[in-house]
Length: 200
Image (cartoon, rainbow, N blue to C red):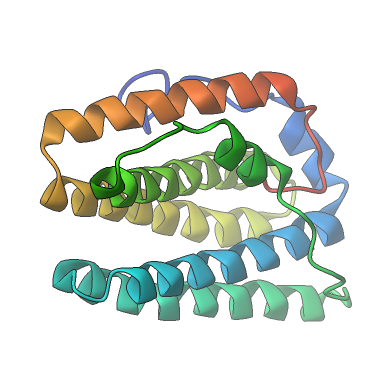
């Protein structure tokens, strides 16, 4: 799958440039939201393993990702404690909720896993793009380095979910599903106002 369209990840719509500026003045809020995003990512991998225990490749691939995502949560929480920040309460992820609401309807049962994997890839790709913006635009050098590491990790997770989808479905079917979700995401980003207190 090409990763050269419009950005290295093939996303159809770049993040509004104002987002990084907003995030830079809302560090406690953005770190809190990031921490919960890492928790949700670990939970989503567990849910996929529980839902598809017969898919050996999936179980093998996602088992270490659960550990990695929880490790990311611990890294973000450590950064927050170092700064004297409190974790706060989990927030609703409007971006993900809208993706789920506006995604393809009446999916055949044998294609549900395809769309779950592609949706996970999309969320990882968008997270990677946001982390890149933070790595390039935050004033504090330590935080730029912090988010560069997350950017690299999310790029790998995006690729892993696409690779898993291509193990179970024809490549062309995966590409069609990917384009469907990119179109959905572009529509949703046009609806949302950039918020510096949210990763998505």
